[in-house]
Length: 147
Image (tube, rainbow, N blue to C red; front, side, top):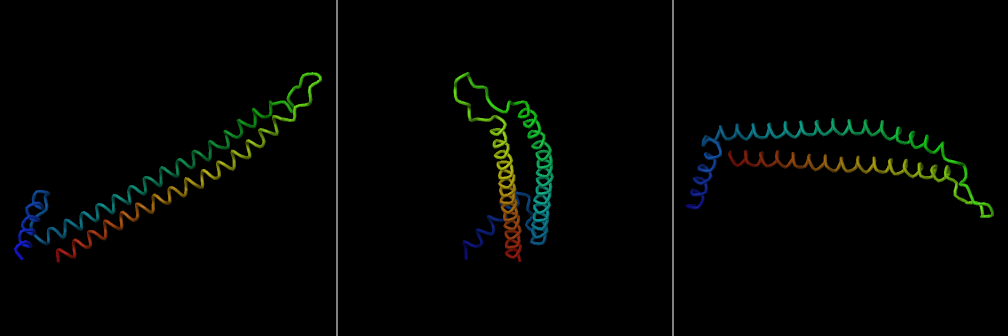
């Protein structure tokens, strides 16, 4: 029983150093404020991240088609067939066909990258929600102990 009293005394001394009052009702109020501030912080951070992500997506969705358009203009200037020296076999590589396949691959890669980015962001959001829930649960447990 003596150790318990020493722990309470030590807790009160450290709590006072951190700005926590010794009054039980004040501590409860401070923990409620702490939880409210943390919840507001998490909500604001998620809103900021959401805004940034939406802006980046919007920008990318404008940039990628323009890049493809620029590439198409360059491809239009390529010859149908590569020149071959006299007497040499005809070169089977057709520049426009190659660029067509490159464009197909780039569009597929873009779609995959966007899906992966969305998946990674969802993972981060779930992690943040777990941290928020953990903080709330911890404060609830502390408030229970104060009672």
